[in-house]
Length: 117
Image (cartoon, rainbow, N blue to C red; front, side):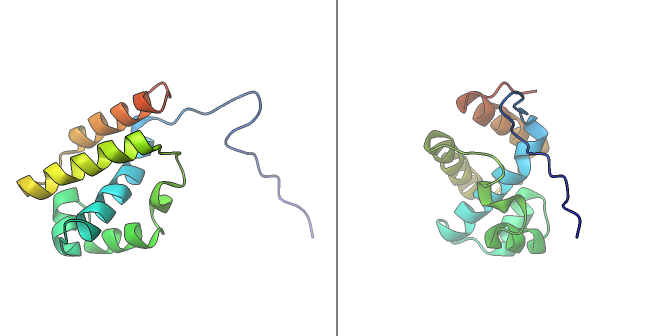
């Protein structure tokens, strides 16, 4: 059997900085978990607020989609920012615009020391 050549995302010389758009699925995953577990929102309501399907919310909660933050190192400060953001969403009950998620992604990347693209 032939071994597959797997190129790491992070090497000793080149570190790939994620784009804000690439962080959005991770943020949606974290927000979905917060809305369902902390604020007791139903998956259907969470899906409406995040502009995704209820199936996507289920996958976020199971870690199948966006791997629940494992694809991008999210520090405690960024998690706190996401928790506060989820609280605002739960309070307002208004669907989040894609541009708002991009803004949050940019803030998280800046907070983690990555240079947003």
